[in-house]
Image 1 (cartoon, rainbow, N blue to C red):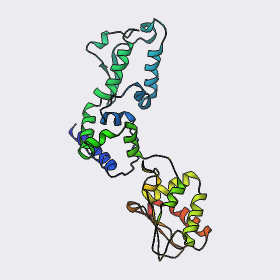
Image 2 (image 1 turned 60 degrees about the horizontal axis):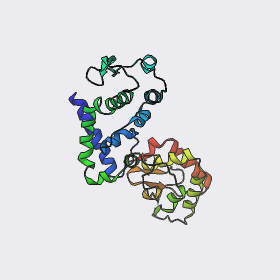
Image 3 (image 1 turned 90 degrees about the horizontal axis):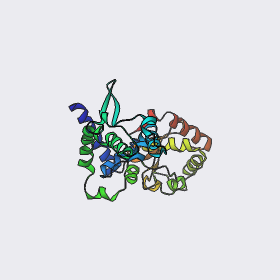
Image 4 (image 1 turned 60 degrees about the vertical axis):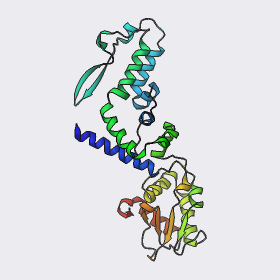
Length: 270
């Protein structure tokens, strides 16, 4: 319907803006979507990612060594899909319900099946999405990317170089890399387990993943505050900025930072 098309168009614009502004967004679309945006035709491997059971079944059909495919698989050129609680049979080719899948045409069947999933069945919604996306993030520059690179631009990567995060940090106010509180902060941070470090990223930047260009591109900012050490650190996610009170001990800093991370929804400022 018209409302659904508007939503898909808006989502496309949002995703385009995320890539244009190098903003990591936790939207894990299948690689096939990025292939379509780059005019690369999705294949069976993409179906295996989207729907592993269907993908494996089609691969088994292609790999089957026997001659009795008709009797073993009992397939014709149709596909069943549920729509609003009703299962409908769709023809993959004209008169497909009367065409039996055999050894000679099984590749044609698989190709038609994959084409239906990635092209025909989603045509209206994908058209709305892509028109929104390309309105913001189109042109010749887009053609320079591989599908996997475009996806990485959207969801970031997981190559966590924590030392690089420290080396590229910027300090404001009374702080510098040699300030006692800053030293305590990094000692504490590097002792955190991986999941807690990722939680800090989420607290500070709004995402637990990093941009495709790595930790250096985050360039977090740590600034001193006049607040006493009974106060918690405060994150300004739009600026990757951490307000860090001058804690006098590692134990106090660790306790306050942990409390902030555990309750970050109440203490993060956009």
